[in-house]
Image (cartoon, rainbow, N blue to C red; front, top):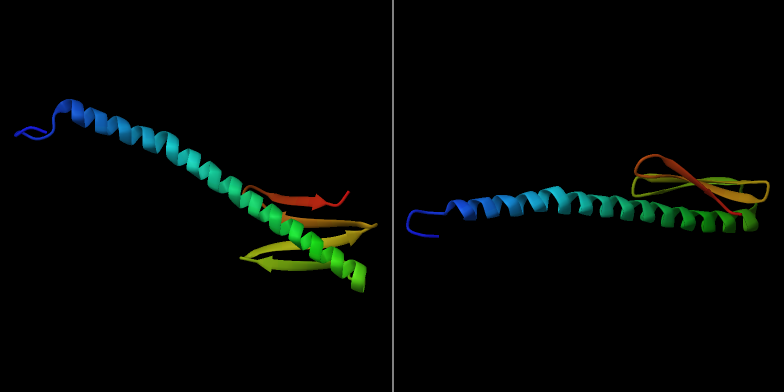
Length: 98
């Protein structure tokens, strides 16, 4: 910086750095956050499956719903298989025991 203010190259450099930050780093962080959110939903679905397996083997209950942080995890026991339906960032997912 000189007495007359910022120079033209400094302004271009600042603009370039801002463009790099907003065009690459923000989409990358958004993609990481949605990936982590999906993994969190999957983990809670597996926990629900475990709790459903305990209820099914102990009491014979064949279906149930678990709500955590506003998301519903619906589990059902059919033909010896346990399935959990849960929300994802783009759609509803379903995972079952083998």
